[in-house]
Image 1 (cartoon, rainbow, N blue to C red):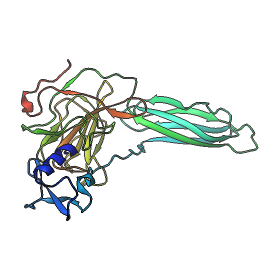
Image 2: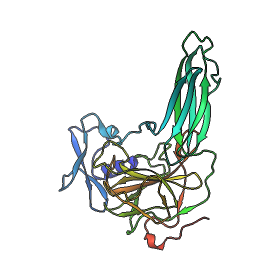
Image 3: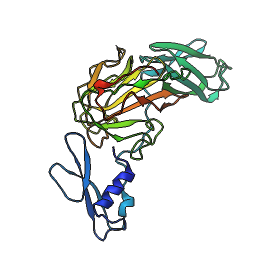
Length: 316
């Protein structure tokens, strides 16, 4: 994905005026087989319309193609209410292959005994459940009234990341980094601030950068929707961090949730799915920082534009 400030520089080099144009101007984007992205005001075979600058808009009208969205809660973490003669018992079940931090709040409470004054937080192990509360009516002749609100985040925030140098998670190359940490095009949210995008041809073998347990995969997406990240693999490492591989080729994922993989294990092939500006791998390391999953800084074991066969990974 391309940094917007770089894009503006490129457009200026094409002769597109920074001032508002007198007539509409069309900017074309071309992506070659190696994921190299170029922009021009001249159409060429395989190019697509990237943006039309209307009179009076100028380059200020340019905006990133993707916008952040709030991630939906995973349905595999859910609240069950068991009703019995004494009242209600609230249980939370985690069907994921990773721990989750949960928070339960009760709102609109009336005629309830046993309701906590503050939200309850707990770290629920993989594939487990817990009884959080039993509520009883203060007046048995009247019904219980309350609204439960469950929030959760993947991972255990009590674990602290250990220093680690990540081998390059692909075969072949050398390739180039098309966007790095704090990239203004799309790496400006908490979940992706320290991500890197590596331009590479579709079908490039992708390998696990670190040993861990596969906690989620997506393998069926052909184009830009429904997932902005396209097909993906998420691997939970032993120190609570997670390696996430996005925009993978449809049908290429070779691992399954619950599977433990070693560093270097083939997991998928690179693609161009989701809201992608061209064929590339989006790689990010994340952790639960307290009821929120965010990206964290990491280091590769060698320069991105070198061949991964020369990598030396492992702990610092």
